[in-house]
Length: 634
Image (cartoon, rainbow, N blue to C red; front, side, top):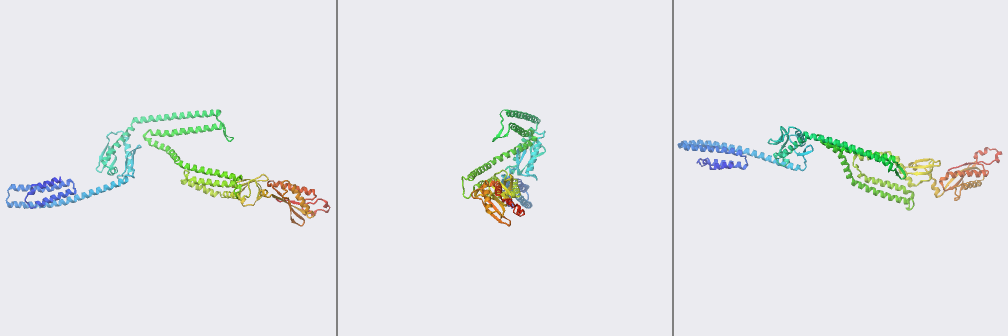
């Protein structure tokens, strides 16, 4: 169009007129049109400019033609030409002004188009960078994802638009007046609406099209058949015959459920009768190491309880899988059916997944346990060899073998627990760690005496003040050690009393071990006897030694001996000492020794009587036997 206008101007007859202004006017017109062409002005603006430029030229041609045809005089012709020149000059100024206005409009339009282009490029770049990390919001209708919405519109987020679109599709799908061509497109310049009657299902904007790298019209044409098909599918699903079919299927599932329950009950009743028959014919008592743990009656009862439990489990599983099936028959409750099914399946999947993921940790725990177990077995074998004195270690006593093994075993098991702890399920849980700290705090606060007794038990073990079977004395308690544990020591007295003494008490008390001296050097028993100076001391020595040698259990070598302890005013103190080997019989041997002393002194005519009573007796009684005082000390 602009190029045709320029060509017309060049070929126009008016340009051949001999007027002085024809060359500048033609150049001005051509320059203006060329500028418009180079700046990319719209066709409407160029068309308007061409009409303005052509109008004076056409008028001029008409004037010239009229002047020639009228055969005017030269003066009139000059006057007419002057008037026409003035008119053309005014038109030329007007055209220059129009040219400036058109140029300003052209520049504004160009800047606006450039800004729109740059804005669109920036939007495309931003969307391209977000496309890989933005999943979009799916439009889901009855579990079916139709498409995704990525951008917001008019203060509504992508999530709001997706939810409103899904609700509108569901609402339209349940409309009984739906026709096949009810869904159509409505173009609104800046966006396109997907309509159903007078209801807007979805508005497709320029932003939506940019996210899909297309234009709104193409995107709307893509969405419309998807939405239309889904709406007609919903209509078909909610038809009368489909509802009848779903009701029939619901009744069928209920009937099958009833028959399965009857079948399960019948099979388990038959199993129960079979167990009762086995009780009479084949069922045998459960015996563990000659101990009858369960007789046939109790074993049969346990089997019946197990069968009832299995029946309830099977029925529960049947109901668990039947209820979701019933809810899934109708579209209105299908979502609830899925939720119920997930409530059932998710815990099972979680447990199975946890078990599968825990298998490597289980192998690690098994390896650690087996290693520690065989190390403990090896140490137990070495301990037994040391205890039986088959293996001798210098400075290590045989009675240390068992407690040392117990200590090492405890440390090994503690080390094993410390290694296994990180691999236990839930060890990283804050609740698990809190419970562990709480238990440790309770044990540390409430077991101070227990720990002190425990440590004292090991101190006693390695100090070796006594061992099991020794005859000892702890403060006022005398008896044989029958048990020595890490916490307490139990002693059986000569009266057959069982006394339990905490180990911490033993470590802070005086302990006398009679058996240790008896085994190595012989235990000396002794008793003290007081007698007046009228009885010769050599005779008293001989009688006391004879009484000791006569006592069963007293050793001849080393021989018994007498010590004179004290010279009082009225009497003399004698102490008889005798060696024995068996400390357990010390009370009996001491009793026999005192009996023999009485017998020998009576046979010798020496009366055992308190010396301070001797002066009160009459001189007439001098011929009677002398009485002396005898006292014994252990």
